[in-house]
Amino acid sequence: MNTISDPLVDRAASADIEVSLRPERSLASLAISRLVKNRLAVLGLVILSALVLASTLAPVFTRYGPTAMDTSHRFQPPSADHLMGTDQFGRDLFSRIVYAGRVSLTVGIISVGLAGLLGTIIGLTSAYYGRWWDLVVSRVMDVLFAFPPVLLAIAIMAALGQNTTNVMIAIGIVNTPIFARLVRATAMGVSGRLFVEAAQALGASNRRIILRHIFPNCLPPLIVQTTVAFAWAVIAEAALSFLGLGTRPPTPSWGLILNEGRNVMEYAPWQPLFAGTAIMITVFSLNVLGDGLRDALDPEATR
Image 1 (cartoon, rainbow, N blue to C red):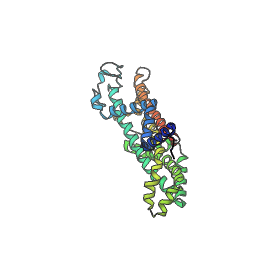
Image 2 (image 1 turned 180 degrees about the vertical axis):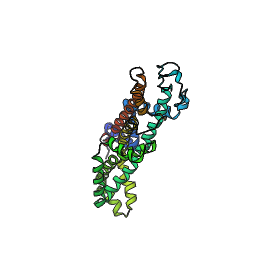
Image 3 (image 1 turned 30 degrees about the vertical axis):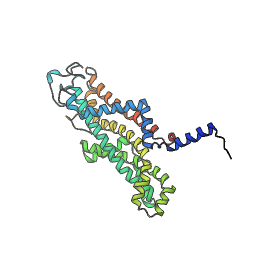
Image 4 (image 1 turned 90 degrees about the vertical axis):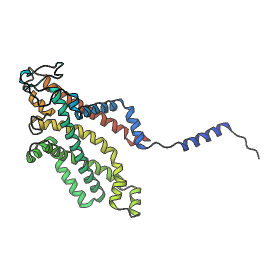
């Protein structure tokens, strides 16, 4: 019996074969492609990269040391020699603000890294093991959430002492409950799924189940929360330094420069202006990057 070939059917069949043979894109590549299409997120990433580069290579971009004083050039306005003017001690503000970026970004990276590590461990174990451990963790997190974040950081600084290392510890402790609650909520939603139950039935160890099956599903919200916590850490470090509880002079800090400039705003407004602008730009770049990452990692967008 002869069969009649339909061109439309043949074309559809060949299209199905081509689609089936086409390799599927990974979630990571899909997220990156969506992130690149987000102009604001790309702008935030470029600004943040420029800030990190300038702070890391501060000696290359500056002509003066951050603590070099020249009292004969006090309160000089912005000029070719001093791009952002000088302060009450004749120190170059551009150099101090660039070097201060090292302090703020280092505090942000280490404190958020500490909070993310502790919060992830606490959240994963609390969600997976449950029972009394989950109850204890939940109550401790509730107590920490009861305190205003900056007030809690000030209390920790008062107990530990004033230096940059303790600023990192204080901000890290304040951020830990946020990461712990986020990871706990995400992990609890994953722990009851079939692939976790299958791994348990096959005899996989608790450590393997947590690290190989539960933790990867917590990464998208963790990445987004990291940028939010980073932005808050920059503000918190500046606030503590402004209050005299953070970085000690003469080490430059954006908050310290703001504190030194608040009494000279009438005749040297550029001092607090440039320091405040540096904080604003950094926080803006982190916020728009975080929004872009949230949209790129949204599971609903992959459907």
